[in-house]
Image (cartoon, rainbow over all chains, first blue to last red; front, side):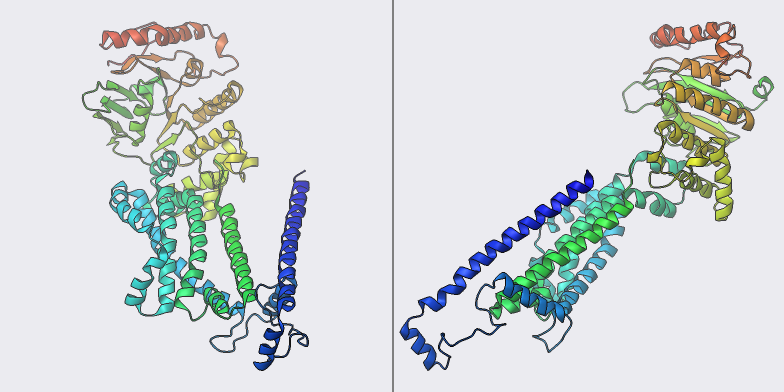
Length: 291
Length: 285
């Protein structure tokens, strides 16, 4: 029964994909046919004067795509990128694998730094109602700030643009982790703490063997939310700071007016984001317990 | 049993215990005095809100009394400790650990220097004691309510405390399961000479398990109104206890207390020292 449902859902997903690709194909096929038909004699002559071959004789180059690509053209571009993802021909021509690796490195560094701050701090404020109340106003003010709003401050103080990118990831990942850790730690069942108290468990064992496993599902949820936001933000941050990374690649291809490459970058951002989320979902399943 | 009780210095001595939750409000209970002898099984009965659980928590060190002292084995009880094992009503097992893991957590707390093999061997003995060896690797969620409570009991016994505190441990169990675990508890306590202080709502349970039964009047301003000594022989079992000629008179006495006298004592507002033919060992309150 369950298998059948999954199979049906997979088939339906496939059907939806086919419909979408079909619409895409129809939309791009009509537009591709249009320019040749509408070119007037004057335009053809102008093209000839500009040193361009007359359109009738022009067999379009296979990798030269004007405007929005058709699904076939897109597939060809994507296959090209995927066949050689790690080439490096100078600052403006790197394989998409290298660009993604740069982005992932920035995200993981910023995320790791945020973890190192948010989880211990979350523990402390989760266990101390006094500190919770004292720190709460800061969290409430800092949390809603768009991570990119920090960019000028980061660029001015840090100077290095790549490190500023890491800082932006750090500042946007910290809040969900901090709040969820504090919430999870504060919500550990009293009975479990009482058991630990009657067993004279030391503070360190209490933190690692009772509170951490009890709060782990909530903490991992916070990490999952943080990672989602970090992946959203890195693309935007890299568009600003430039240099490398998938966000820079995307913006660079937009400047090249290569919509096929833009589309490919968008798809890769989605796929990598999904993979990151699945990773945290697996981690979450590992630490979840049923009462 | 009785010669234990008559020793000069009681094992547990409670004096003038009172608890007030909010200033200006009458105390939930006050003037609570009692002693417990080593190896004695005490049941405390009273209506909801009389502060039984609070008294147990004070004995456990999890809560502070507003007045009064608790002295156990010559030392004042000031906080929770390994010398008192607690079985919680909600069993309070750590759900991410297996049965073994839960017991091992307690054993390691008691004996930090032990090797893993020692901890597991010691734990296995207590898992076996409550008949859960086959379920040792299961998580609490895979166990029935009765099995969970058995694990809770095994965990409390595994630290080998001087006194065991049970907060209505069988309240959430069905009658059949409850009976089986009562028999087990009786056998284990008889074998280990464990001192036990237990809250119950079940008069039959109290008669089966307890050497003495503390009856609390209604709260607020509750107190221990009567201390009834169980005159049934200690060899009693669940299967035969109701054939003992003393069973029904004792049972009626307890039920009468819960239905009528517990209220009267509260209204009278004084210590009712209602001596009956069952109270061969009534303490001054």
